[in-house]
Length: 326
Image (cartoon, rainbow, N blue to C red; front, side):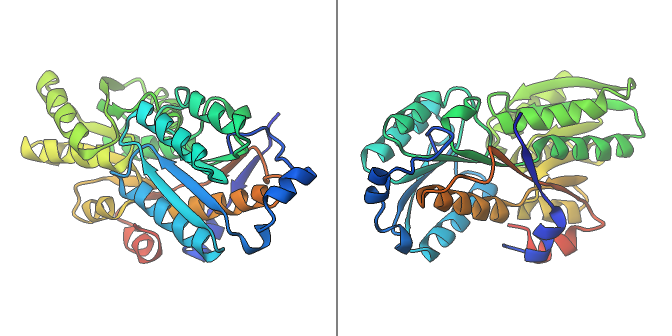
């Protein structure tokens, strides 16, 4: 059974900012010869993101670059633009170019497998950031937010705001494991309240641009929507734009997940009930720590490393923004 390391939130707040391969990294003599510059940290590392249309992923990439360059390494970033085939091709190209390791945030947690297999074939270690993959045996470790907790926090806040009854719409992303975990946490709470009904649910791509027309269609198809769960902040922001345009925002509570700067501003304006904040700086810093452990011939700390989330609303948003909003 996998051991799970919980990263305590208090530690996060006090700091501010802080491998497709087999489970055991290669540590024989030939591997040591290949990485003779390891003490200087002169590694070339690829980061593949499902998209860079979200401030959360941009913040992760910025910290990855900063932390890797601090160690004398180089980061090469790839933007898959929410296209699975493009992400697979980009990772294969990165491996062919001779990178020492791959960091990946997969667009599709199962569909990414061919890219992971390509890494394994060349003995290039993979570390997952933020979004788990299905084939965990093909990566060295996975550093992810506690997305089940994030979904739970959203549901608890929405239930309280609705007075335990009402109609809820969800803007989902079912191919993404992080979002599936959020849905697990969210529905685990909602199912305890029979007077709360899920009246609409549709996949988006985690962007404002996709969520806005989805919410417009949901409004047209449902006479009354009292709450909306955007499974990330851009989805929630897109929903808010549609509701505002239809003059329905005053009657609907919207929640999201990420803790992005734009979401915080909407909380302060009273348009977003709250967001379950993640910590891209801590995720990225921990990923770099694990990548360098592996490249230096050591084992990662564990198979999965979880970073805790925290609920942000009008009561604590200003304090959160001082050190953590991105």
